[in-house]
Amino acid sequence: MATHLINLNFTLLRNTNNNGYLRFFKQWRSTATRCLNEALINQPPTEITTLDNGMRIASENSGAATATIGLWIDAGSRYENDENNGVAHFMEHMAFKGTTKRSQTDLELEIENMGAHLNAYTSREQTVFYAKCLKQDVPRAVEILSDIIQNSKLGESEIERERGVILREMQEVETNLQEVVFDHLHSIAYQGTPLGRTILGPTKNIKSISKSDLLSYVKHNYGPPRFVFAGAGGVCHNQLVELAQQHFGNMNAPHYNAIPDEKLSCRYTGSEIRVRDDTMPLAHIAIAVEGAGWRDADNIPLMVANTLLGSWDRSQGGGTNNATNLARIAASGELCHSYQSFNTCYKDTGLWGVYFICEPMQCEDMIWNIQQQWIKLCTSVTEKEVNRAKNILKTNMLLQLDGTTAVCEDIGRQMLCYDRRIPLHELEARIENVTSQSIHDVGMKYIYDQCPVIAAVGPVENLTDYNHIRSAMYWIRL
Image (cartoon, rainbow, N blue to C red; front, top):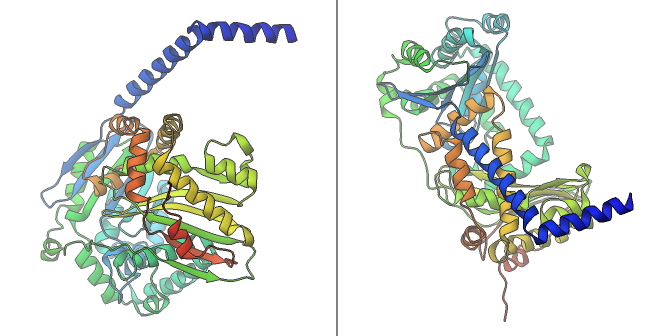
């Protein structure tokens, strides 16, 4: 057996010296790349139509037996003010509590009898209502969505009941420390601006939001120019256009033609917030810098840089065989329980950084190692590391588009962010064009000598002083 292994090693060495093995590997990689490019180019096209009232319809027909359709609305907590903060999320809850045509019970029974699923969510910039159903039930699902959007009853008893539900939801969110940390991170990164507010809103607002507040929010923010009707799976685009025209085409009331300009210019401020609680077992910390908006050309290199940092959890193991430097350091030194890099984008800004959970006395070491890896991105990341990160990013990108709901989500979000859906082969090409120099350039622009923002909750006595963290955002070398 040992002789066979030695002979195999000599054979590989001889082939490598003769460039045979390398030539075979390059040919295999070239074939795999060509197959990937062909698969991406042959994806079903995303068809787009705009109605006379400004509403856009975008869909991808994959011929599946099921479909996901939904309404993506260009409105979220960013469009609120201090007095009505939380109203967008409140309205999302009220949408399923009955309409002038259907009671809440009738709505739930109809969805259940169809075997469909109806859901919604609110973010800082978007509100989404969507349904998953069999492809033959698409017309009924469209009619139900239009009824929910246009004819919500907003009964006083339902408002009071849902008020209690939201208050309980707020209590549950307070136990999710990752959500708490990211809310704190936004509150100080964008202090005094709309992005600094939470999605759920403060308790005093939830207790006082009335029917008139909900109607006013809908009047000023829900309108066809801000609607994208998206569909994926077993959907026919022409049918969706006809259904949208039938159910949404009459939304031309005067208040829809006077939607206020979006509130942009959310100022970023490098700063920190520490909520020290030594009774907690672990520290939850996020450190970030200002990133790029969705449409910024720097967003793709920042996505690759984000992948270069990666993520790690103790349960994954891996040790020295982890894909990224920070993961190997975290695993070998037991610096944290877990960490994950993030690249949160908005229309005109973003937050790019790392969130981690660690023991009370590990905060300083973990922060130091994160900053060392940040500086490496700015100065010395290699082409080999960048190529590996690009492959990981492309794999994750494709895995995230598994299923009609994920594709529909991608269509709706991209239509609101880019006014089009970027084809997969174009996105793959843009990722492939990123080089180590691209990473150095965005690193020097967004990381090097920039003021970070830090949010920490728990036993954070060991967390480095902000001024020391700020001074470690650059190197002075002679």
